[in-house]
Length: 216
Length: 216
DNA sequence: TAGTTATCTGACTTGCAGTCAGTTATACGT
DNA sequence: ACGTATAACTGACTGCAAGTCAGATAACTA
Image (tube, helix red, strand yellow):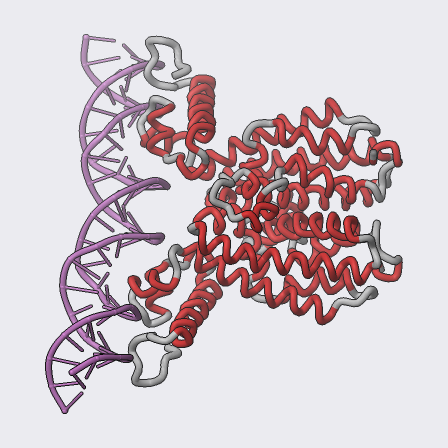
């Protein structure tokens, strides 16, 4: 509960934002604790100390809740990349930062097939706008840092996005409990972590347009 | 029903395979008709003209059913790529064939986050083996066709897999009904089809290791 | 203080995945 | 041909989680 001590209802906009924030925090805690599939809306409501009905006043669906978490994580990722990337460190930073921001990779993995598929139009469009703006910032950054021409940088940026999506998928498989996996299948799971597979692919993609100093 | 006219039960292995095939076909028809989210196990049972209980004798979960459909589609894709790819056509073929095999792209998009997450260990391992074998075949093909050294070809093959995963995700977004999407967001959906985004990225990845003739 | 508004509540509805005790087609032995 | 054993088959049922809504009440307003 983030409302002032003897306040039971959020009337002002800022109070509502605080409550929504509390709900997102509760969800983050539960995901941490039980994984995505262990999270139920009843549990989120309980953890946030509100009723289920109230929860649904703040998000339309469970997936809208996850989408909000993703966009917040993506904002962190983009800001940190902008802050840390130079022509020397671009690939290293792009490989490392996404994996360091909590929930970014697992939410990205579920973004299209699970999350966006079940968010009503208006909230989806609003979040898409935020995401698109951030995408453009990354493309600009790549162009600036590598000195590649605009259109090539845009292609590379798109390809990076695809690859990041894919790497996020493989990351799920990599985090599976390996006891019980037969030896001959280990390689299909092991070493598929995002921070391992993505930089490798990013290097292949960026090496075509970046000064050689940034590739190593 | 694929069983001989006056046969009501599948006793022999071949009859069981026939019945399983009939179930997969029924599922394919329903996915075609209602999309993934419209498919229920009750509907699959009805379409296959068996009871729900029987359906569950042939697959452990709904996702195991989808996984089986995916592996069959992937087999088609790999066979066709092997048959059609030459050093000149590699990129073109790899960009086109996956999009041409029905269900391959949408199932790939859901493979990790949705499907593999809900298949019991033993059937999952069995299908993984088949997938892994096919992956190795593709890596070998790339090495042969481009003349790239083994390890580089393996990296490129991995990167291609990541990218294909990502492109499949974007394809879902691209197939959304666009009426109702505000004009400023159109670019976020349009032109993201698999057959458009994947070849572009594949070219970037393969251009580093392929003779120039194959890049154009 | 009474009246009004809109937040909040939680029992309820809905819908689907997956189960299991009972039924019966088929194979096999006599 | 007939009885018995086996295992394929059935569909009503259970469990569970998402999402709803009519009523309760905190907080603002005159």
